[in-house]
Length: 145
Image (cartoon, rainbow, N blue to C red; front, top):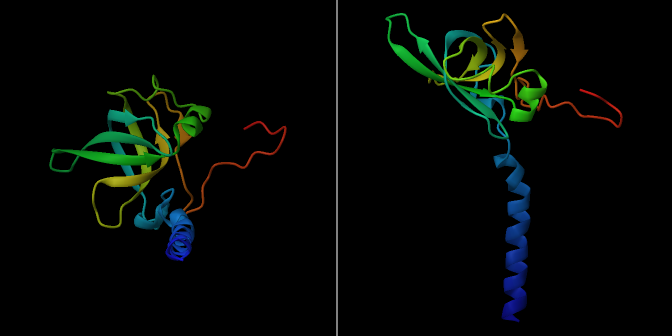
């Protein structure tokens, strides 16, 4: 009888974990101020080509001349490569311009929207829409991105 009761308890616990798990999944734009855009001119100091999001570290000179490190959240590595970014085009030392939604709390972190490379190409680096839904296109059979 104890084992049946324990099994029921474990089952109920797993049920609630299954319900709550999506809440802790992929990030969305909740912490970012989607009513405000910042334009950052800086130099790439590091790029983390990871999933589900790529992180671009950018050194930006402040008004008083100090360097400030911004962390830009971008789409997945696969999405960025499909859009034309490569490890060579976004290497350390590259001067870029990023348009992004800053964090609401004022820390130097933002959800990227567009990135302009030195050759003038502007590429969407967005990972989520302002309503938190993914920008990853839903592919249908025979569809080419």
